[in-house]
Length: 293
Ligand code: HEC
Image (tube, rainbow, N blue to C red):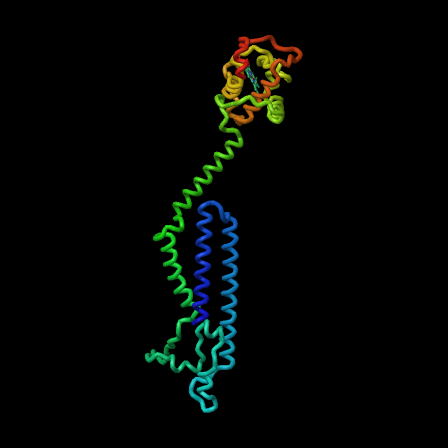
């Protein structure tokens, strides 16, 4: 019985630690889903191994008993006291196996067609599982329903959603989704200009010329602008386009960060006087406006 109580305590401890794990997961810091799956797999395999081991030993004990049965009735040759005294081994205890010699005491009174029934005790492992589930149920109820220590499924769902929401905001920020025509800033760092130049070469060159000197579209290096030459104006023109005049609305297919980089590239080539410039279009940008760039 001592051994079983120890097992029970061990089982409870496992339950408590795993309960802690789930709370950690709920707050997003602990095990990932894959880790949980792997852990569950390991526990399952361990249980399977234990069950197989138990069953093999059961068969072994049964076969041993069959090949060398203990006498059914008191026999002069066998000292009954000795049979009683014989200490049952661990497996016999765990499986609550009684020697066949004890069968006589286990027999129930009733008989049907000469067939009688044995009142074998419930095996220890079964009792352990049975009482274990009750204890588990009580502990579970206490943790998740009474005390509120463990988050319910709803709580876990809500925390996960909050985490995902935060991750979404972070990744959008990385893409520069928060940049728009009002918040765009002049940024002339080489990495930005370089990215802008590459994108310009890929998407804008065909209409604005290799160096921005203008072909179908206007010259982007002079001081004259149809739609304004501030960082905000240029960003806005690129984002929304001038569709009826042949300038594409790039906002649909380009990330705000990329639009911002091209805008900064255009600002960087201002006054670069490329060869074969297209004649100025629009109005000259005021000095004052230029200062606010
Ligand atoms: C299919 C040709 C075409 C392509 C490709 C094109 N544009 Fe344009 N773009 C135009 C035309 C045409 C205009 C003039 C619109 C008008 O007349 O109002 C223009 C105008 C502009 C203006 C406003 C200039 C001003 O004077 O206000 C900017 C800035 C601009 N484009 C940037 C770009 C950028 C950046 C790209 C690449 C991402 C690009 N364009 C790709 C045809 C194009």
